[in-house]
Length: 592
Image 1 (cartoon, rainbow, N blue to C red):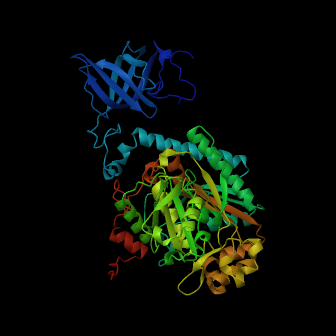
Image 2 (cartoon, rainbow, N blue to C red):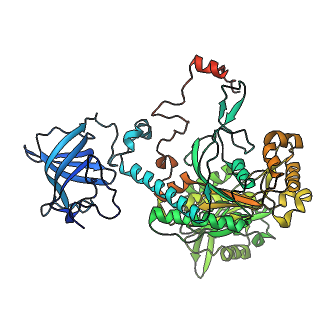
Image 3 (cartoon, rainbow, N blue to C red):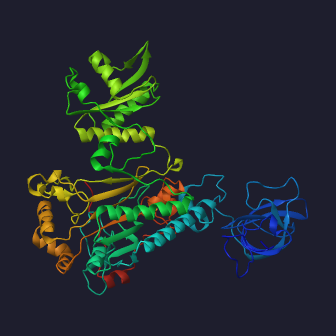
């Protein structure tokens, strides 16, 4: 590599700079270069010499300057100097540019700056409200630069692999019509049609199905979606998803498309392609992990112990199901910790929680528990065998309805064993064969588990009228380390099946026509069999970045109350704007 030439993969510098701050290396010694960036640190070395670290998004380099030069943190500068090796004993092994420095420097101040209100080195914890208020400064930090560039790499990899698989990128409208997808929508008043409203799309679900009717065959979009829901660590009003739909495909085809895209994106972000996803049915996930979004990075699988207590005299275990988990090496939990677990189980809906410490007693195991005396010797021995208990373990048992008991222990499993997001590895999992309906509402009507356009499993079509809650759906979720990344399904494209599902959901023909008649009308003009999927990219990138909160991978997020601290949004509109829109603001009704 010739002196002054950037290393392979480095951005090409143009304009005011000839090199980026993080790119000079020992092989560049003797080259005269110009860099631009922000002053990160200044260290005085006597009266006439100063060491100034200048930073841009590629990294940081030390510049040796005249000590009389006036410079402060975050001033914007252009430095021209000669690349030279650092003197012996001053090499900084923690820096990519730690072997070199810029000497004989000329400094041009491009802009001065106020002292920054937050720490950009990451050495001090800065209140998140301050970070969000000054997000334009926070974005300069190594953490945010890394996260947002990782996000860009994920998006680029996804676009590449989707194009490679024959998909066409199509942009769908942001001003849309209200849809029956369950979440609350943001309404946009029309200035030209007073009293009428658009909504911001919760997803491009209906629009992408219409592209299938239109013969586009394979559609994808990195889509912006909006939902007016309560916010939390993994949810924002605005979110981004990889949205996919394809014609003449099976469920396996769709999962294959998405698997390839996600594994490729993960490799682009981390440098290593993870192992392919495991596949579990919904029923298996609930029975083994107590959750339809299982974290496969650790064990502690649920164990069905119903048979162990089939003839028990202990009334608390004379229930439809008894389920247990074995917590390795937790047998020394104190009574306060065990009481807290019991309260946690009750808070999750269990009638109670039975705990048993596993101890060695001679050549056999002993179960130390307040309820041990109510169990027979055979029951205690069989329980230890069924759960593969070992000395020092803790057994936790919940009795009751099977699904509810599994759900309680599934949450306790996550509470006790789930590693941090940053711990890795990346364990993807497909969960398939979800129920078509998740229960009934207050009126006795069935409730769709996903959306009303999900195709029932062909083997279960005959159960739609006689036993609808037993009907499986051709739907599938992708899970990563306990986070649901997205959902998809094969869609209903036949009018007769769609009518049966509407009937089961209590949706009349009139209501169906009013809510999504344009979609049903389009299906009458030759809708092909089709299916699709949507991946939440904010969640995916957060996990790949090792972040617990998706706000850390979004350039300009909202707070948990939905406020933009930087701009002050949302703000009231002026009376003139309200009048143009035909809107009058009234006080909300008082609660209670």
